[in-house]
Image (cartoon, rainbow over all chains, first blue to last red; front, side, top):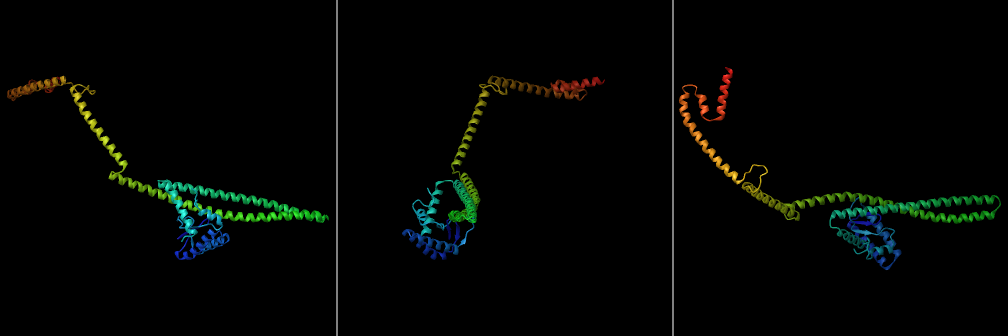
Length: 92
Length: 275
């Protein structure tokens, strides 16, 4: 599966890694919903590190759609919340 | 999976599909998408340039502050050498304030540098993607055009396409026009033959002339027949005479054949000339 970290690029991940990533992802969502900025930052960092550690980076000129997308490492809770709101990521 | 990753991915895809659905021709969509990517790349590059400009401005400010700081340090040292401790204290306290600004600016500078590196990397990555997309786009467009052409050919052969319908109509129109022209040509022939139309070539004749021709043609035939009969009858008697000698010339003259007559006269003349 191909995962994009916004602003960084894409990684190819084996499906076997998804159990661990899912746990972190659910945790991240919970922290976002409760507004736990500190926890959000920590979990996001852990999730991104896990993707970078387990995945193989995709070549810059590869044109593969990402199946999963993760916020940039420096994205704040508010920014991610805005991205996931009805307006979505791309305006219009 | 229902976390942030999944939701972000879904939003991305939904938006991308929505954008793609807007255009009907996939080639236009590809070109549009490429154009958007170029614009995005341009924005990123502009962002890199802006950050670099800010970083340079900070560097200049830092240099100025540092030279001011050194100057104050020198002034403090001089003041102290001159025994003016109060002045030296003033210079050093100003220097301390400047140093605080320098530290703040250095932190900002580092942040900007990090941002610039990140943006530069993003721009390079984006450039590679855009280049790859352009190549792929052209391939897809060519394939699409070829597929479209194949479809058109197929449709043309089966005669189901609208264009083929048009061609069919054109052929029909051409056939109709040909038939019409043929009919008109036939009519013109008839009109020319009847004398109702003047023949610009002068070949056709009116009905009176045609009848006169027919009659005179018939007369000629009759005359010809009579002449031939006379020739045959006369020929038989002349053959007997001719066989007795000098009959050739006489036969030619009496036969009424003008060319033979001329030939005979000519040959006679020729003989006389020689003599």
